[in-house]
Amino acid sequence: MTKRNVVHIEIPTRNHEETIKFYEGLFGWKMERFPDMHYTTWEADEHPGGGFTEDLSAGEVLIHINSDDIEADLKKAKSLGATIVREKTEIPGVGWWGVFKDPTGNKIALYTRLHPEQQG
Image 1: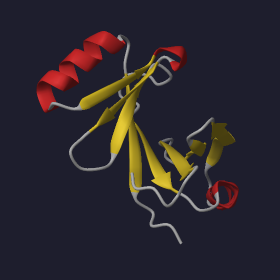
Image 2: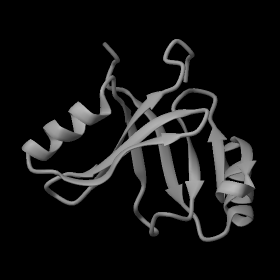
Image 3: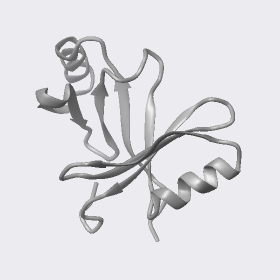
Image 4: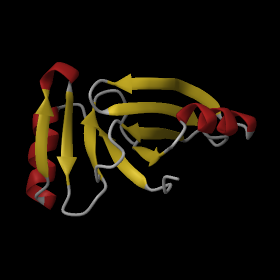
């Protein structure tokens, strides 16, 4: 069974280059750009890492939690009062994710990596 650790954190951006420059300068994070996806990942010395996304509004930081069974977790979250924002969706070559909004309105993502035996 997967530990329910935070495995990825998404931070909103309006300008990737400006955001990259800021966080590289502030924390020294290693960056990898994915221009076709309008996405940049960052890697800290210790996990979790994360990404900069244009899909969130300022202040909407999105954390991703390990999940062995995204569909079951989304179903359970819904039974506890959550709203499903994104059903299980493939991230090609990476894994799968889904998103729910808790009863307070916070968005939380569930994540299953393609190769669970790999660290990160």
